[in-house]
Length: 202
Image (cartoon, rainbow, N blue to C red):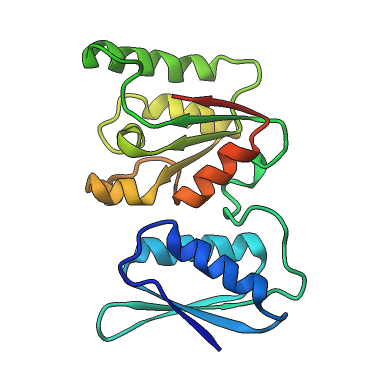
């Protein structure tokens, strides 16, 4: 059994290393990935679901987490982003990537007004975005206290998938305050952006 030690390695290293190992594994072969945080464990679980791989994990006495993955009988060829990002892959849908909690440069006060107006405008499009990706300070827009949560809920009700970078939520200490959508990783964000039919990157 292959054991991959990614202790101390940031997102998206655990997902990338696990994916490489799965590619080299025979159907039914197991690999184990040792991580030191629950965000990495969640990201690996999402990847496993996206690839159709059996998944299990065990918390160690030292606080680390040992994840066990089994290579699928028919390995998937798509993006291991987890089901929350799959609709964006090559479907021709619109992906909106928001990397800050303001829009444009200059006045932060004006930028906050503009980004709110922009997200509201997305709700009024005839064809709303399929996926919204939030990273860096953009994750502040998906957490408690954000003044765009109502508009994001409207987009979600129209079928939009809303994903926030787990590393970014951790950095800003907002992991427990996520108010809408799900937690994702940078590999999945990069994949969704790269495969988008149309991309808006703020």
